[in-house]
Amino acid sequence: MAVIGKIRQRAGLLIGIVGFSLVAFILGDLLTSNRSFLTGSGNELAIIGSKKIDIQEFEALVKQLEENYKINTGNQTVDQNTLESLREQAWTQLLNEEILSKQIEKTGIKVSADELFDMIQGKNPHPQIKEAFKDPKTGEFSAANVIQFLKNMDNDATGKTRNQWVAFEKYINEERVKEKYNEMIKHGLFVTTAEAKRMYENQNRTASVRFIDFNYTTIEDSTIKVEDKELREYYNSHQNDFKQEASRKLEYVTFDVVPSTEDKQNAISSLDKLVQAFRETTDDSLFTSINSDNKIEIAYFKQNSLAPVIDTPFFGGAPVGTVIGPYEEGNAYKVSKLLASKNMSDSIKVSHALVAFTGAERAPAEVTRTRDQAKATADSLLAIIKKDGNRFAEIAKNASDDKVAAEKDGDLDWITQASPMDPKFKAGAFETAKGQVSLVESPFGFHLIKVTDQTAAVRQVQVASIDRRIEPGSKTFQTSFAKANEFAAKNKTPEAFEKAVQEQGLNKRVADNLKETDKFIPGLESPRALVQWAYNSKKRRCL
Image 1: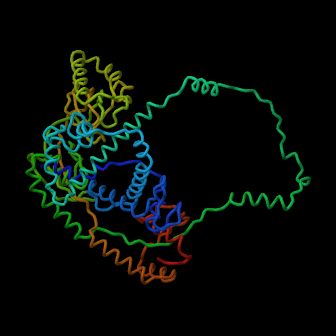
Image 2: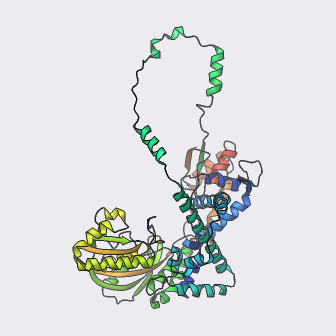
Image 3: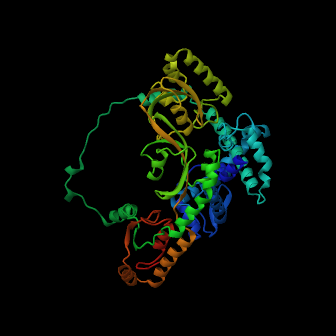
């Protein structure tokens, strides 16, 4: 049930992310101003092919993507940058549905039921399926967990779990169809011999040229007569060349929304309720993944690299399993658990050879082997290295799917526990003794890892943590909004605005040279509505 709970927590991840467009700010304006482009209708957003897209349809899609984002990240608010990306994603999705999908439909490309079954619980599961349905004990994909989830998803009386699963099946089906279409297009493009010859000849053709330079400065200005007709013609044909882009200047004050004492206490209380369960859980990785606001990697730390409130006891003899918190660190409250303590190197010099497979993250396009085939290949290479350790560099150079590292015989240089690398790879590397080679699987494939050097061993502790971000609650937002609303209601003129700023000691800010397409104003979130207002209002108006 833990895995089922995890995928339900992260169901938004199953919807997927698509490409970007350059018209996000236009779409954002249309949603707030109820105007359209390409047509004069107030509800019509655009025409794609022969289909008319109205604002409500687009807005509903954006809202759906927002909800998926909130479920996936655990955030209850969406910042301006993310919102712009979601609008771009929604627009691209509409384009794909109306243009690309119709072209694919003409080809007759489909995904069979057997192929879809294979992607969900067969031998070649979709990467997101593999990630969501891991066995907590082994970290390996478990088809049994998929089956268990499918059997139990209707236990959700709201039907939300089933709807999300159906949406996910639709997504991976469409994704596979597009992959097939792209492969068909890719293999259908080629350069003929005649084209290659012509390109070569054009690139290597040279010519010798002789010319005479007659400089206009040798002509006396007084000899040239310009008629009024010529001036008018020049003006009419060049009048837009030096037109200045419109701009606005705004003076404004901000009312910051700062977490209150009550907000902080709510965050602490939320963590207090989890302390006992955190102490008793046997699957710390899954527990932290589900219950933490931020994704905090379980890792080893050396002394003085942790917050003092846990550094001192964890390195002072506290038994494994000790849980401390909530305590404040940065912009969050945290609870931390001591998982292990041992002497180990802080830094190691690592080389690796990667055996990727179809479906693995960032797998090269030319890789066609299955996971089982990749595992067999990695086992064979490991056996060769164990017989002759000197062949590691040769294998890393010639047989690795990490082409960048292969250029240096697999050398990844020095890494530490803090290095931004895949946790499974890093854990396997630090478990490997100096001079030895181990086999580790990560989302990228199977790694043959060799530790070529290491620093002296020092005592380190393995720590797992959960946290709650210190954020303002709805009551705090309402209080700040009330203050801003009262200020706006009482100060409708520039004179009243200036007087209130002085009397209340507010920090007046200035946004100068503001363009109509600008999406950012310092100190403000989601300022597009304000930019629109500035271009629709008269000078010296207050909002």
